[in-house]
Every structure is written in C-alpha cells, then in structure tokens.
Amino acid sequence: MSWPASSDLLAPLAPWFDSVRRDLPWRAGDLDVPHPDPYAVLVSELMLQQTQVATVIPYFTRWMERFPSPETLVEADEDSVHKAWEGLGYYRRARFLKAAAGRIAAEGWPSDLEGLADLPGLGPYTAAAVGSIAFQWPAPALDGNAFRVLARLLVIEGDPKVQAANLRTWLAPALEILGPARMTQALMELGATTCSPTPDCGACPLADRCLACLSNRTAEIPPVAKRAKPKVSSLWLVAMEAEGHVLLHAPAAKGLLAGLWRWPALSADPIPAQPVAPNAQSLTAWPGWTQVYTHRREVVSPLHLRLEARFEAAVGLHWVPWTELPALPLGRRDQRLRDLLAVPGQTPIEAPDPTALIRVCAVPLA
Ligand code: SF4
Image (cartoon, rainbow, N blue to C red; front, side):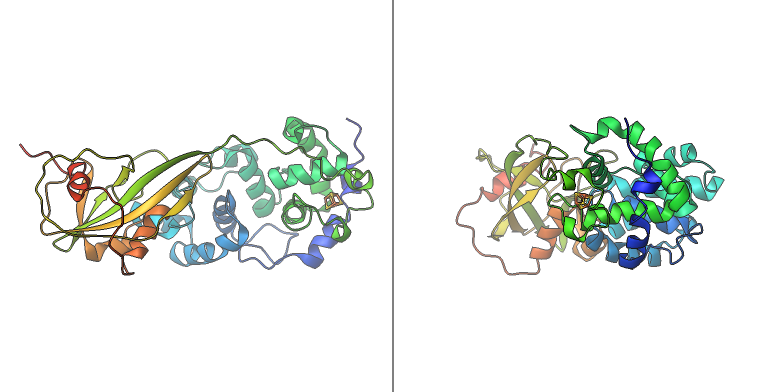
C-alpha cells in the first residue's frame, strides 16, 4: 500500500466540514474538545445504525427528553423503552442501549476503545464513532459511507472492507492532526451528502486529488455487491376484538421481535375450516401493502374481526383492554394495522372464514 499521508490528502475536508455541517441535535458546537454529553452521542450512534438522519432526529429529541441520562434509561421499564423506539425498527438497538446504559451507570464510561467496544450493541464501528466524537480519541470509524469515500479517493480495487485494518492505520494520523470529532463526522457527512453512490464530484472538496474522480472511475468503485432476491410471503394480519379487548401476542424474550406486541398473523394459504365457537359479528378489511424487510417481503392483508365474546386464547396470546393498546410497543407492520382501526374498513371481497381465524388463536374446544 503506497497511499499518500492521510493528513495531507484529507486536509481540505476539515474546513469544508466546518462550513457545511448540518446542525444536528446530537452534534457539539465545539469540535475541538470532548463532547459535553457522551450519552447523547451514544444514543445518536445507535439510532443511526441502519436509519437515516432525518428519521432519527425526532426520535432522538423525544428520547433525550424522556431518558436524558444513562440513569434515567436504566430505571425505565422495557415497554416504555420499546414504545419510545416504536417505528425506528431493529429494536435490538433499544435493548442494547438500555443494557449499555446500565453498565455506564454502574461502572462509569470506559476509558479506552476496547472498553467501549465491549458495551452491549457497539462493535468496532460504533465504538470508534463514539470514541472519536464523544472523547476525541483518534479511532477511525469506518462505515459503508466511509469505505465508499476512501475506496474512490485511493482507488481501492474490489471490496474496500478487505482493507479495513490498513485503512484504520492509515486514517489515524489524519484524526490526530485534524481533530478526531471533526474528521470522523466530516467523512460521514461527505459520504452521506456528496460522495453518495452517485457522487457529486463538482461539489467535493477532495475532487482535485480523488483518484477515482480524476480517472473517471467513480461509477465502478467500489463495486456494487449483488443482493440475493428477497423472499416473498403473504399473510392475513388480524385485529380480533371482543368485549372491549383486542387479542395480541405477548412480546418474545429474544429474537428480532423481542419486546414487541404483535397481532395474530396467518398465512394467506387457504385454511381448512373446522368447527369452533361461531360468535363472529363482523369482518372488515382494508387495502393491503407490502412490508419490506432487509431480506424478505411480506404481502400483508389487514383484517378486523369483531366477536360477541372472548374465547380462551392459545398460549402466548392475550386479551388486552382496548384502552391499553396505544401504550404498547408494536413493530412497524403491526402499528399500521393499529392505525387502520381508526379508519372505516370495508367488507372483504376475499378473506378466510372467520372461524378459521379464531381456530388458530384459541384453545381447541374439547
Ligand atoms: S471527488 Fe467524487 S468520488 Fe471523489 S471523494 Fe469526492 S465525491 Fe467522492
């Protein structure tokens, strides 16, 4: 590797960032000293994993009002933590944040990068981001945006992540000389706003030294990874209501949906009808949608089934008072059905037999 000194190559980035940086609620005014509130940096970095800045801003603001310190977060119950995260997705991050806050409240902030990386949910990238932005440690934080910028700047062939260790070593002096908090955020900002997948090289402070730009190779560097085709499934999502209650799955303790209440969902494949207590009053539907996840898609058909009386719910399902529904944390898909309940539905043209819906949610009749 014969890359020019990072502090020379990246020097124009520092004044550029000072002139264009966005005023984000977690950003410190003075980038030359440690951040006055490392917890705010930790919250923002966990929220920004997998989520756009514009989406994060209102969540961050509400979160900091509700849980302004690690100590307040530790005292909060799981439902209110998940509720505050509702809509951001990847709910594991909320639980990691609470667990990390517990460690910080009990032991204080770690004194080095290793200690930060050992906090729940951080990993090398987030630890370096928090270390450099909150504590001014010269720890290079390489996310997808930073890899893209550096791959183009240095014309790294193939997947730049293969060069992660070399890039960190190369980048550290630039952080030391030009300022860790400033340079970490400058690289993030350049990748997010200018050196995007389709770069705006005319607006870039590094255009006069960027090898990909100078050799007209920005479209091919870095190579775009091929994604596997997402799997598609279809389901009925059912809000069952009886005697002022709704039927919900209680949150799982582990897994992707841990901490979240869920509506019963049934495969949209035909369900064989079997006799159950026939107490359905009405069945209504709304137009469906496709729920997009990282590796799969769900074609969701929402239904509202009103019953005369509650039945004995199967294991894991609970009849919850309707009045408590707004306070429960739900995932994005399930929030959408909750919101639809305020909108008039229509008689479904096609829907499963209500008794079949009840059957899979009830303790079988003797
Ligand atoms: S010149 Fe273009 S390709 Fe190079 S770093 Fe700037 S925006 Fe990215």
